[in-house]
Length: 589
Image (cartoon, rainbow, N blue to C red; front, side):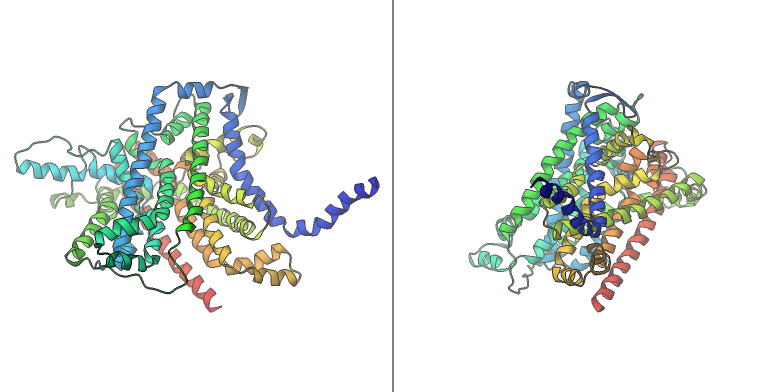
């Protein structure tokens, strides 16, 4: 009996070997994803309880937490972080819901044009958006303030600065809010389009006005989608670094991401333990937020209003408010894109700042562009940026494809946990991911791997950050692919790896390419993770732009920013064309 049992184990594993070998790529990819996410965060929590440095960790201690939470300024930073995330989320949600309603459910003129223009703000990197608004609302030289003071002087009021000041917590809330509108718009606009008009008809039969219907029918029915979009936006704003470092740092207003960055990179000596302790706190908060978000998504199914019955949503007539509604959209577009782009372009064309005027046109030159393009360091950063963007996109989407296939197709018990882990990095600030990788790859024995100080550690960090988006994209695509196609290939004797390569991937190519373009475009403009992990030899363009701005070289900063906007616009346009072409070929095939 013992012998039969003793032989059963080896024989059982020997019989499973063909199945394990057939799933080797999937197992390795899933293992790498788990390592990519869990290992840095585990080491972050562990190191927060240790003395010393990442390369020479010392004894266990709780001193880092005592130091952090005995400082009253830390609680002020917690409050600033919460107010920034909550305020900007509410502002973005209000604007996004308004424009989703106007473009989908009303007869606002040029609403299709407005729908397309809602996507344009995504082309401007966050660091550049913040810099442009310092040129618009800086108390002394801000273009809007210059114009307002000129108008005030006509009425006999003399002001030396202001009246508006972007260097404040509410200035940061304003910028984060208008920058986050596009994401929420894309998340809720489909719900407006798909709502059953029978609910509106019932409201109208009862004598309710359009305004009452909007607040008593539209909003309550959309509440699950609004809560989910709001939670997603809140998590995004929690980890923001670009606007707080450009706007908040000069004003002495710190949020947790900026303080973690300065503690690890600017303090002398670096206080890695303090950064790890604050990062671990952020991690706990992120886990709670991810849990709530997934609960909201799950509960959304109980509010289903779209059925199999065909219908077309009723278009609401705005009457005399049609053109004022479109004018309101034009104001938003001017504030988010037109004005920031104009002031960046103007600043890039003059060596010394003067307000735009006919007389100032004589000072226009391309000197700032020549300074940027003639700098070998900038060209080296351009090369680094291209490598990081392309490598991050390939690695992220490959891992997302395999992970989504395992989550959707397999029956293993831990697939739900795997799905949750791939979404977790979205709620973790880039600076926390950065400090986690520093601790992981500077600590023995991994310190012997030649990763820290190279471009590849930046690629790993950004892949960990963007896998949340990649896995959501591929989850939906894999779920739409009927399982019988894979079963037919397996019945013909193909290994699962072969099925994934020859059957699944070609059918999922449009979604894969779309996700690849999104990840690549965001990687090209990413700031927080490269800022934490780059050295002088591995800097990317976003970090170079911040260094130029930090040195007070506004002209070259603006010139580099304009070039980045043009490059991203060309890349996005080409990507859209490529996605549509791949989709057409897939449809015709």
